[in-house]
Every structure is written in C-alpha cells, then in structure tokens.
Amino acid sequence: MRTHAVKTHARLLLTGIALMLPAGGALAQAACGGDFDAWRNAMVEEARAEGVGQAGLNAIASARNNPEVLKRDRAQGVFTLDFATFARRLISQNRLDVGASKLRQYASTFDRARSEYGVAPEVITAFWGLETDFGGYQGDFNTLNSIATLAHDCRRPELFRPQLISLARLIDLGVVPRDITGAWAGEIGQVQVLPDDYLTKGRDGDGDGAIKLKTSAPDAIMTAANFLQSLGWRANEPWLIEVKLPAEMEWYDTGLHEALPVSEWKARGVSARNGTLPDSADTHLLIPMGRKGPAFLAYPNFRVFLEWNQSLTYVLTAAYFSTRLGGAPIFNEGNPEPGLNQGQMKQLQAKLNADGFDVGEIDGILGAGTRDAVREEQRRLGMPADAWPTAKLLNAL
Image (tube, rainbow, N blue to C red; front, side, top):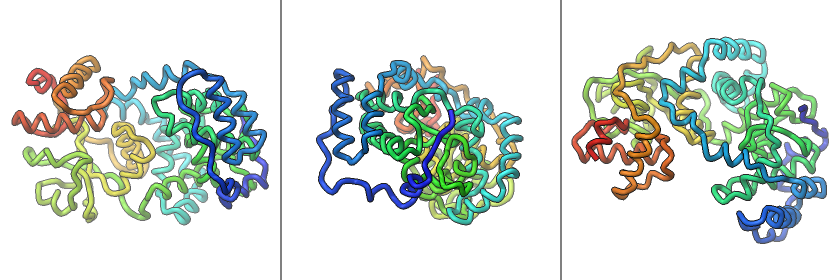
C-alpha cells in the first residue's frame, strides 16, 4: 500500500510540529488496560488536548485491538539464537550483493547523507537490509491497530502512547493514510521508524516535497541518516572492528559495562584481526559468545546501534553487517564453548533471580541483565568471567 503525502503538510514536518502544539497542559493520560473501548475514547480526548485535528481523532476512534500483536510481543524467539547463528541467518550472500548494488544505485543520495549527517552509507544500508530487505517486506500489520494495542497493553504503554498521538498527527497532516501498514510493533517504511521519528526525523530525499518512507528509497536513506545523527553518530569515526584476543586476560572487563582506551586493550594483548585499531579513549571489548568465540572492539558509534535496538545480538549483527558492506571479511567464529538452549537459559535465569539478581523476565533470552549476572557469578565461582553462560555454570549454581 502506497503512502501518500501532501506537500504543504510535509513542509510543516520539516519546520517542526512543535509549532502546532497547544500552549496549555494536556489532559491526564488514559490508564493502560481495562476496557479497550473506554480506553480508546480517553485517548481521543487526550489527543484532542494535544492539538490533534479531526482526521487524527477519527483515526484513533477507529482503532481496534489486535491480539496477534500481543502474541508477537510476547514471543520474540529469534533473539534466543547466539550471535554466530543469528548473523549467519541474517547476512546471506544475496543480502550482501543487494546491499552493494543499493550502495551503487543510490550513491549520490548516500553522499548527501554523509555530507549532511556524517553517517557512513554502509551503516544505513545495513539497517535498510536487515529491517525490510531493502524495502521488499515492510510488514502487513495495520499500524494504527498495532500501536493502539501496544499503547493499551500495560507492558510498555509509556513507549507506545506517544506513538499513537504522533501517528494521529501524521494521519491528520495527510502524510500517511489511516490504513497504513507496517511491522507488528508499529514501525513504518523501508528503514522501519516509529511514528514519532517519522514525524520529527523524516526527510524528503528525492526532492518531490513529500516524505514517503514506504515507497521512496532516497527519503528512507536521508531519514535514517538524520535519525542516526540525532542519536549521537560521530562523523568519520569507526563503530566496530574485529579483533584477536590473547589466550588469557582479565575477562571481567569485557562487555558493555566497562569502557577502556584502545591503548589499554592493546597493552592487554588485543589486536586488530585486519589492519589497525584507531585510537579512542572509550571502547568496549565485545565477546558475545565468550572468550573463545568472535571478538570485536566497539567504538562510541556502536552506542547509536544500541539506541536503534536494545538487543545486543541484533545490533552487533547490524554493526558487523555494516563492516562487511565496507569490505571486512567474514568474522572468525573461533571455538566457543557450547551455550545453553532456551530451556536451560530459563533455568539459569530463575536461579540468578533466586540468588538476588534482577535479570528481568524469565524468557530464555541472553539479555544485558542476564549477562551481567552471569559475569558476577563466574567471578565469584573462580571461572573466567566472560558473561557467556554454559552448562558448567548452570550446574555450579
């Protein structure tokens, strides 16, 4: 389904939607949960108080609850995969070839994106490829219903309630139709942005006066560049470099919890697998599958990937994919110790929670909380504290 946009409305987006907001305070927020119809009516009034026009209000009033969205939200099984498996699955040779083709096809747009926002073309292209296969599959969920469902649900209402208001503004402005479709979690377009980012970061890349993130690759490219810069992207700096590790070192300092200068990592025996390691005072040594698996040095720009998506496995794959598009070789998988299956991971998480750690939901996913707890327990037990959970650790707890 094609996204339509009114040129004068698109220009309003470029000059800032804040000019349209009312001077007074908004209505009290609608509580999450409960009767969906009553909640939706309260959201209409909240949007009205926020200055949303009638077309946007009518859109919210027409929203429907979609149980399939909640089912997807509760079962993101792909993130139970380890980094090597996940990366192999997502970074096919075809995806690399198409990415290289897109870099050539839209070279002038990528050059403009780099000039205006400082973002490397291969970084934008990696997100474009991973999110939608370069626009080939953008999702077929009704975006209005998806966001209303997630805003009504009490798991993350603080994230999705503002997105519902922003989507209503986009509809009211005529930038997107009421029946626009996208991902189950409400992202729209070829680079999958939420409505608030569409509203505030959307850019007209092809010069037609409209912002069409579903159908215009130049619009998607420039919007992604603007969005990444807004998250803190540093021009002309690296984001991820594969490294070689010594057989022994202080493993506890690896991961996102500890930042050290490149000079310190070098002093500990870390070196680039290919080429050299540029200087930086603030880098993280990432070993997603433990000390015997793949290893990368993450520079400050890597944090921008984490702002885009909170899954370390996903963002490390995206960052690595970016380096492959820039000419880096396939990573050295090494010989990591066997990890845990989902059932074992849930057992581990339950034990860690019982021991006083907060690993969040018992979901079998190796998230940041679980990694941190594993690292601490490994150190307590005298094991290499590389945050990679194994059967040996599970049995020792």
